[in-house]
Picture 1: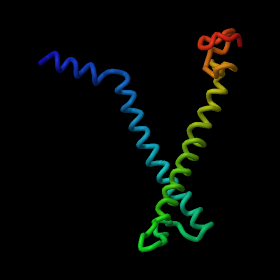
Picture 2 (picture 1 turned 60 degrees about the vertical axis):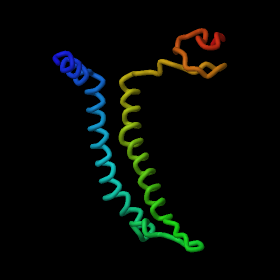
Picture 3 (picture 1 turned 45 degrees about the vertical axis):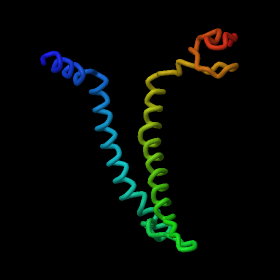
Amino acid sequence: MTEVLKGFRDFITKGNLIETAVALVMALATTALVKAMIDSLITPIIGAIFGETDFSSLTFSINGSEFLYGAFISALITFVATGAAVYFFIVAPYQRYQERKGVAAEDKDCPHCLSSIPLNAQRCAFCTQPV
């Protein structure tokens, strides 16, 4: 029984599991933040421009089949707004931080086979062509 508990303790205290749990919690918090931003800022702006804040009620019918294109438009707006928020508030600032920190790209693409090789490499490890 102690072997099982020791194995479980080792599994729980591994760095990868802890890091994954922290990343999941942060992702959930970020999702809540982005959703709040979309609901309270982006949607009213779209409503002010187009005169309607909820597109989910937009439909049309063909031969008795009802197409709910408004739900798709709402999902598309949420997707684009989420992507933009992640890019402008997380990715772009992180890239600027890395540039200021002096972290340069450590790899380059081989012009012959387009594999990623070290920046100072003189010959590609994949296609063996000089670079």
